[in-house]
Image 1 (cartoon, rainbow, N blue to C red):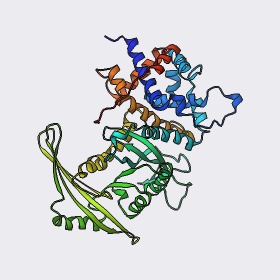
Image 2 (image 1 turned 45 degrees about the vertical axis):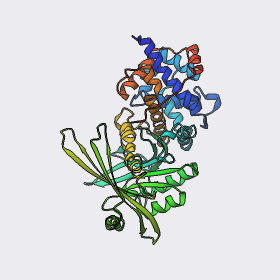
Image 3 (image 1 turned 120 degrees about the vertical axis):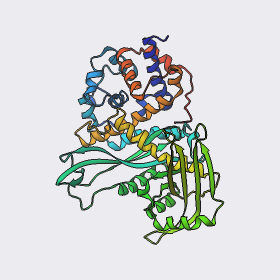
Image 4 (image 1 turned 30 degrees about the horizontal axis):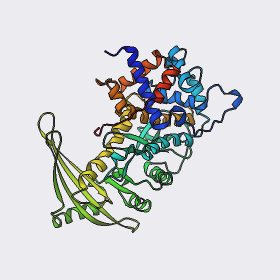
Length: 452
């Protein structure tokens, strides 16, 4: 039986080994940040302050004040941050907040983006590409903060029943994979330019800004966008054509009426465009595919587009044994064939839900407390947001990696339980410089499960 001390060491070893293996260590993650502080008055290096925020999220503390309660004036915690980062003690949460309020937000976002870029460049995500070529990027928006009074001049507003609600939204571009990864690639805050704008900011406007930045940052990355029906239309088609991106977009009966009519009219003329597929552990899930390729569409700006439409009708038994049928439909600029409709549907279209489940839902309800206001300062609040995204990337690599499975063959329970055990290990086990050197000089490989 593994002793408690050995288990704590093993967990810290998994953490340090994973971060070092993929990114060169915590200090390297934040090497691109510019420190605006007076050098003569610095107690904590900037990378240590950034680490404090990430570590708060990795341990699912839920609020900034817990940094002081859990990490300061604790012998093992002080020893561990000394060993890892060369600082004498953990910084206070207020010190962290004050430093964050002075950072360049775009530099912190670039730290986040660089993590995903390294995973791409090092071919970590190659096995999960769509059609062995495309990286699927799901783009979706989510609310992050809500106030009864105006928080800042950039608040969005909504009034009903005579009451005004002030809130903040963000649009996320996340790399999503078939085995369950959901890594933040780039973010665009949806916010008004001032208190009384003539028109409020919205997801569509933010999408165009985000797409432009994404193309500039990754000009040659083969991208397939996975989008909901809000983006089904000529402007999105034209943007993807201009950027040489592929897309798979949800198509409801209310979206693009002419395309839906063409799909139904042309289906009888192409009976060969049908496929029956059985899946599930016992083949109990039946998917019926139908598609039309091509369909010509002229948008409201009189621009012509060539698209394809793919439909999947899935039947599967529920827990009570009753058959439940669900219909899915997408519009895409992929050329559809019997060889690619299954991966396009399951790994290109339906995978979009991972940004909701593995993305926003985990961050809101899985202990990261995305909707908690970690700072009243606008800039610091955005820095905290990006550090949360960085923590989520690291957490997924740890949770799904073979190092954790090998160290704990029976598992460690839920993701929240893993976070609790990380916290306990950090507070109760001293990682010595000799132990750290041994960890960093040990050769190993990290493998991931192929299924989510």
